[in-house]
Length: 396
Image (tube, rainbow, N blue to C red):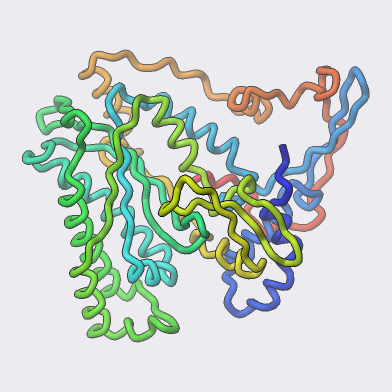
């Protein structure tokens, strides 16, 4: 069922005025995202006309923008990604670990997204791998899938990574060791090492001139001021959550399906756009049992949404340890042998879009929605103007 209002509707209604008002501060990336979402599944990117051979019903299928920030364009990419991961699941407990950053770092990240988000990934991964390799804890090489989120339920900037970690690892002698039942690694130990590694990497980036500071943060460009801020950050706790292990592989997939290809807000959470005011559902984690509705001025809604536009080419899903891309297949095969479990049957890759859509969603684009007859393509129409977003699918 189509939502009453979509992010695209908000951009189409208020986007031109917003672009005019913020012409000096909007980045090219933010402009491209706005334009792509506005154009998605309209006549702008083109499409084709189909007709049922039996009843004669016609329908127009508009092309999607395939921008990774678009709420309407993540379904098929998510389904394909989950299918790929399903073949890699191991018969071991999986843990969910979340690495956050203090607000004092988040404001630096907002002005240095690519650098600081990359540090967040690397510090989290190195923390898990270092402690996992310590014989006092696990004594093995761990694996991890990490997903970057930059938002909270209220759309404020809240960068953090969600990590899925198999409960065990490969020892130096090539055997598999499982973690203790229901327990992966100490949160206190994780948080302290994570803080140290993050601040070390942040200092390295500062020394290399990779950090830029503007406005209220301008003073941090001075080495003494930056050192003072870094010292303050050493004195506060850095929050790392370690949640209960998943109940099984299906729970892992269900979780990944909710988190991997999310954008700042789903269209399903939007309630209405009236007189320039946007209403949407949100969850206050201090009162999680009580659903709430937030109302924002349309310009403020757009501003918050655009906070979460990622730098071009930035990978927001990453794999580490024995799940790293370079040797994932070989390491998983080794672990399956050690655990005495067979490899799953891998279906041949389907490249035809319609066949892939039917396989991943269970719905066929080839059948008439009225009579079930065959739909055939009878016309193609091109773009009415160039897309303002790259015409490829970036599902990371």
